[in-house]
Length: 231
Image 1: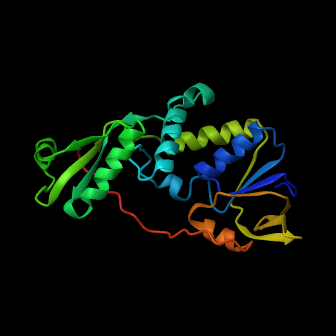
Image 2: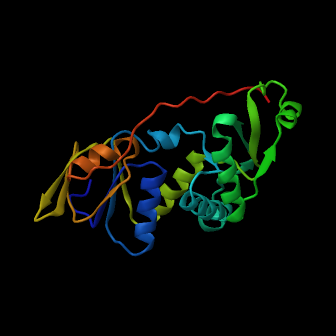
Image 3: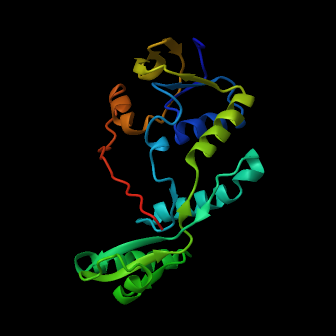
């Protein structure tokens, strides 16, 4: 592992690998990624891998539109497919949140996102196993779908390596040293790396990394469940 770097990226999920590749593409010469376990060991390798436009704030919607376009052209840049498959997404809405959800539908449509409202009867007709007794309506996003996170991570890793990005797996970052209010080095279980810049792509551990330099990052980790059923 290198002992000096222009930039150290902490975390080798999609964000960290993407950051490493894009920094190198912009001309940063020495980019080092450190990962405590293995590539995709965190949420990137355990997510439902949904590409969704049915999100909740204006900046999230605009960012999702950018990401959607990016992944639709992903293969042209990386010669690797994100394996997008359109499934659609359905949000079930009760009376308690109906007004809020209607406002979100209006916002999405205003920003150009195709969004449909389904009645409980329509939901029941399409998906008979869903209990619609307490539903006011459903919000359906026909363009939402799944992508293959592993393929995307591998594409970023390989493209970054060709540009000189160094990936160190099994190298847990344990601290950041500051000198004069600036980053001086990153400590890892495989040795220290002298650097002036750090990208915090630590995912669920990002708040802890922020604390090393006195930054409060308002992240609350939650365990979520994914249920898989037969179509």
